[in-house]
Image (cartoon, rainbow, N blue to C red; front, side, top):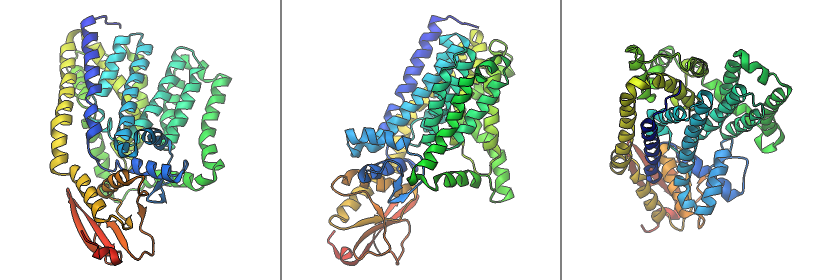
Length: 467
């Protein structure tokens, strides 16, 4: 079903532009949560000229480094004092690129570019993407982009009988693994299975070149983990990390996870989910126009959702690779009601963008200046001044401790090397700690960071230094 409404297209384009612009203020936000992990490890990799392992305070995290490589390539040019906004910019770029792939996939499958832009708008206005995950300097948006790009190119390859696109899917899938984890192959395998069950698509998927490319896709992680000596043990750690999420702590906690996860997911998918439910409830929407597209997207999203729903330890952010697929399914329903409900739909999506601007320009900056965020920078500057001329170590891997360490590293480098974990033996200097610990040193300063405290401990002559 093609709807050629110039006014509608102009409104969608304008909302897409505003949604994209709304991410810009996040470049100036202070650290949030554990964002400092990737900037810190990227700086340590650059300092040590270590391109394979991810050292955090000198300890190997044994994660995959593609996100780090991207941060390094930009921060090394712009200056390491900008490593946080660089990481955020990469996340935002991944989010906007994902929206672009949504528009491309929807437009190609429906042969309607306006519908494609509508699907992209639905994705960008999902509350979790728009308000939080879409700009946060975690690896999940980049991982989600590569996984979805792999699924999208595979889908178009099948729909348009273009097997060469499978090579693009394989490259994107490999990049997804190099960004984060084995789970990239699970998301992709589910999509591959759902597409294979569509009779017209099997001919493309069963071609020798398609099979060869998918065998190569499986060989890529094996080569990375087996052929590089520095990666010894990483595969086992990644696999054990996945298994650990499948072991419940207690029955009551597991029951809370199973019942609460869908509710949290629903909140993260607002306002599009609410609009879809309303339109279906009032029978304004029908699924017939894009029934096949909707069915395939729904099955890919649902099957991939199940393991996270029933896993004892799961986080909604792990669903980012299927957010675009969910947005595509939502867009199919919304577009079927467009003739009668376009104004309603656009008003709610516009309201989401307005809320985002209010949050980005007023609410979140106020929170960071009055509770948690700006105090990280104040603590970091005070610690740099207090410890000048002395060794400084850390043992604090809490979110607040990492944030302070991130600022210290960025502002002292290259005059001073990145912070290291406190060694077993040291005579004089300072150490950052989450709690006071007499075995580490004497309390020199205490910094209150929101609901947490950060302690600066000292040993030897450093304790008597003027301050």
